[in-house]
Length: 359
Image (cartoon, rainbow, N blue to C red):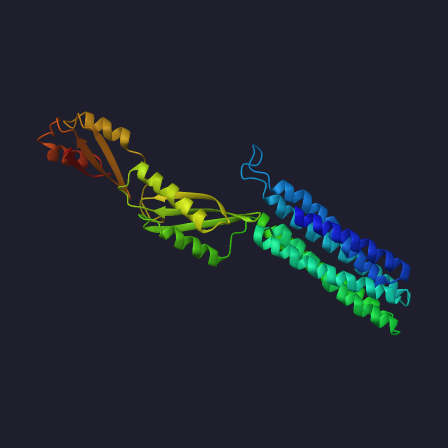
């Protein structure tokens, strides 16, 4: 917010300076440059409003926060630049077509020199804070300042040409300004639009995230990583494969630990969703094995497998293995192997039944 206020004050002063001198000296290039500074001021105000909105956390209507207001602001900023470029280009083409010829005053050169120095300083100041805060909107505003600085350089030489007796040079300079502004606007709009369309981070960053996920104990495989940008933040979801015999509580603990580790290592990540796999994805299976606990427990109740303390189910492909745990003071059925064989013949999805006793 402080940076945007500084930008707004500088752009307001430069707009007044360049437009005043431009109209007084009747310099089309300086007037075009002044309009560019005026567009800078408009986008500074937009950045102030949307930057403040983007800092708001999640609410009922925006469960993922308001960070994309920055992206919307960048799109609006880019569109504004394109509109300004078209307007400047049209006005100067028409002026050149009608043969309007004015020799600018040397004061116009002073105004342009002040603009170049001020906008270049503003570019470095804004870009420095854009990197620190990882703000795309601030970075876009910094490049907007740089485009104004470059356009002022073009205007400077255009005015020199007009003062030397070649007025067409100033119109060409004004058109050069329009092209620079338009190019910057198109690039900003396109880039921000990709973020609105859920563009992910670059492949190098995805590889870095994958490497971090692999550093967690008990993670056997990492796959199906997806990312999306939310303003200057990154949202990520991924599948991690673990040992199929992990308990639910251990898998949950591993999930939370891995997510926290990912956020700590990469501070741009603000939201992590991990899916726990017990076997590789993409295995071709003739059928999908539905939950079998209820029919299995009903079948066990019809046999001598009664009184067990816990029943553990382990899925693998289209097969299910069962572990029955008995308490110390509970006897295991003597014919448990025969009963297990009968159950396996009865249910084609049952791979085996193992029986254990505490202690």
